[in-house]
Image: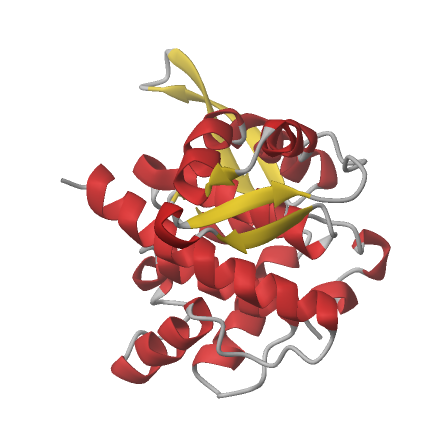
Length: 231
C-alpha cells in the first residue's frame, strides 16, 4: 500500500517531497519544525541521492564520515546542486546539510502544489490584508504516507524502504510527536522510531542497504543540528 504503490505514476517522487508533505499540518496550515526544516529537507535530498546511486559514504577515521558523489549527475534538478557540491570534493555530512538545505523549501513546496498534494489558498486577514495559506490539496497522498508510518510504528508492520526512510527522518528531526493525533505517541512508538533512525529495518536489496546506512548517518547529524538550533 505504501511507497511506490501510492499512485504508481509517481514512482520517481522524491523522499524530500514526501518529507515536507508529511510535516505539513492540515489543521493549522503550518509545517512542523520550521526552525530546522532546511536541515531536514537536505537530509531527504541526501537520502534521495544515495538511493539513486549518486552519493556514497566513507568512514574517514578521525575526520569522521565523508560524503562522496557517485555515478552520473542526477537528472532531477532539485538534487543536482547538492551533487555538484559534493562532486567538488568529499564533504562532512553536517557541511552538506548546512550548505544545501536553505534553498530547498520553496522549490519542494512548489512541486507539492503542482502535483495537487497541497494548495495555496488566498485569504484576507481581518478582511483587509491579503495573505496566502497552505491547505491540503485532496490528493490523499499525505494520508496514505502517514498511514504507512503509523502501520510501522504502532502496528509493528515491516515498512517499505521509502516509509522507513521517511519515518526515520521525521523522527530524527524531532517532529514525530507533532503527529500524535495521527500516529499515537508512546514509549513503544518512540523506540521503534529510534530503531529506524539507526537503520534497523529490512534491507535485503543492495540499494536498500545503502539507503539504510545513509539514513543512520543523516539521523545523527539531524539530531545534532536540532540540538544546536534549539539552544
